[in-house]
Length: 165
Image (tube, rainbow, N blue to C red):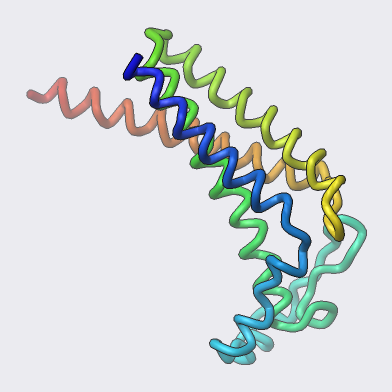
């Protein structure tokens, strides 16, 4: 029974993601914190030339201000990071609880992470001032992909070290 407690890690992490997705944007807005704690105006001349569209809006310093621009990248980086961790936790749970071949454990971890990313975006559709967006699922999937690459690289390093012994 003890080996199945590893499943509490991805389940708990999904709970944290769910809680975060359940909050309206206003509760997660970090622009006031950035404004109060950091003077980011020095970034304006360095990053002022960057402008692109994301989910029907322009992302630039001109349209969002420096703090809004930085917040955008922090939020999108959080998508990648959170789902990177989720994929790793799924992999750990599979490997510790059931004797699955490595490839199968990696594949299932990746697919479960993508499935949860889709459900998370759908859930945001029911949250005030939040909208589901396939682009965020792509970012989440990129985080899961990075986790897969990380697992593979770590395993190769581990085997090289044990082969040298």
